[in-house]
Amino acid sequence: MVEQTNHPIGGRDYPRTVQEFDEWFATEEKCAAYLAQLRWPDGFVCPGCGGKKQWLTARQQMRCAGCQRQTSVTAGTIFEGTRKPLRVWFQAVWYVMSQKFGGNAMGLQRVLGLGSYQTAWSWLHKIRRAMVRPGRDHLSGRVEVDETYVGGEEEGVAGRYTQKKAIVVVAIEVHEPRGFGRIRLRHVRDVSGDSLLGFIHDVVAPGSAILTDGWKSYDGLHGTAYPHEKIVLSASGDPAHVALPGVHRVAALLKRWLLGTHQGAVSNKHLDYYLDEYTFRFNRRNSKSRGLLFYRLLQQAVQTQPAPYLQLVGRAATA
Ligand SMILES: [Zn+2]
Image (cartoon, rainbow, N blue to C red; front, top):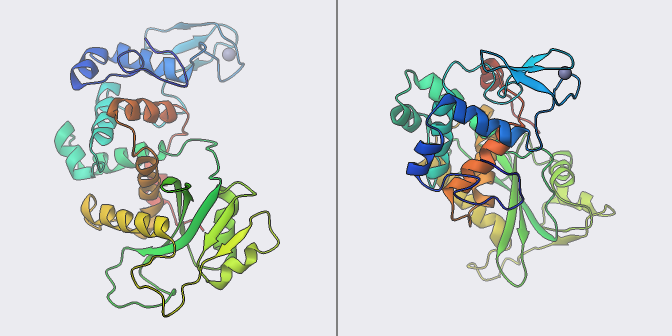
């Protein structure tokens, strides 16, 4: 049913409509076969010995003909150990991908009739973990970088130092003559050179021009592989002019999304997951097909390590 290509086709590689979705994924066997195709596009490979011959056991496990190791299509993925049918998981992914602004836990619980809010919450976090593609590309070209502050309804906080608000550093590709490309976001502890330059180093390809404001931490770019363009507006400049329009726009949209879809109820501890989801959505904002997003997410889900619940609730801020 599924072929691994760089250009997946609707109706062949992924369902285009809810009707197709229901037909394709009517049974657990069909769901498992779909996942197996995404996980092993060139055929089964034993995670133990690399062997390619296997047979199915009565419990839908695959037994390697070489080393006898048993594995399942969900082992080592975000679905590992689940007691819920794959079909319900697929519905959850479809739901999240078909909402323009994503879903929240209460919405998912209602749509799927899940027993507990906790289950819906942890499913959404597992799905978010699959939104970061392993080994994803670096941003390149001209890249705006700046920090923004989200959460913590603090009125009138001025300056860059804050206790309650979370600091998010934003990078966005600037296209010439106009328009923007992909983004990367990271929740950082502070606005030191270590935090900001570390982020740039991790997400932007060397040789790319970095556009920033006059914050001194960015002076550390001098002498690195990144040409630095400092944009400082004079005090008498046009107030309508925005120095870094791409970052400015992403920051505004991100805050609106956190307040709207998630009612501002995102704790700093879990912020990274939400930033991953926002990044996934923003970078695919021109995709017309929700089915394609569903396909991409499942494709990444079978390459993502499982996250036990305790690990999900305990994730700390990274800097
Ligand atoms: Zn084996």
